[in-house]
Image 1 (cartoon, helix red, strand yellow):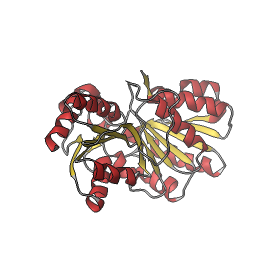
Image 2 (image 1 turned 45 degrees about the horizontal axis):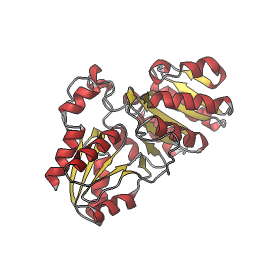
Image 3 (image 1 turned 180 degrees about the vertical axis):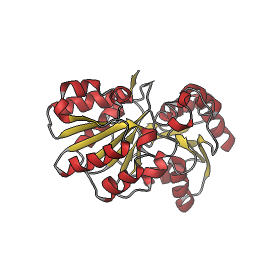
Image 4 (image 1 turned 135 degrees about the vertical axis):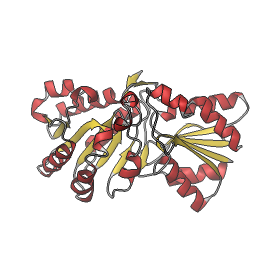
Length: 306
């Protein structure tokens, strides 16, 4: 088990050693992002701005104008909220070559309470033009997306959790940006998930299979651009769709899927995420269990719809 943040920073360091244009900016977050080795080994390609997310994003936009390939890193809860206007104007509208990397997303910081949760970032970032949005589910995928972003010229937002996560993919797995990854095929129902919920969706499908239910699992790691065709295909070929995300039920993966389904091929659906309420305080496992975001909870929703 390896965390997505460690896969991101180790990959970025490898790439930056051979590409001096790669520049990392931290917001008093080199520890939480695990950028310590990068700062120590490549000090000329690193800047620490302190707890000043708006300044970090604005500075990154300026660095991009000079030809730097900039990665701004910090807790997702602060980058996606406190610096939202700078991301909108300086990065998205101006199509700056800046990648915003939010770590400890969702409820990774759950013990610290609502100030440190980021259950709104899909909704906010999806609404900005020109900005790609990614949510890796494991270290293999995080590494792949980091390599892609290092080559990609343009604005992007990637969010990931804090803790070590179970492996979903083998090291040699490949992905296509903008296309959902088929984790498991199935014909009775489809479970569409992103981020850390992909592993739970896969486990849910295995539970369902033991009961004779065939569930397709799609990893929608690219939130924007979105794989509309995969959703329509799932709606046409199965009898129900359940979406699962570490995000509010408003404005995220589930609403995007329901939008596509309602316009193209209506089918029974359930959006699983965090409800419209003040979220309880606890670690990720405790909160997932409380809100039913577990393999057993996902499987139960599939059975209910069927």
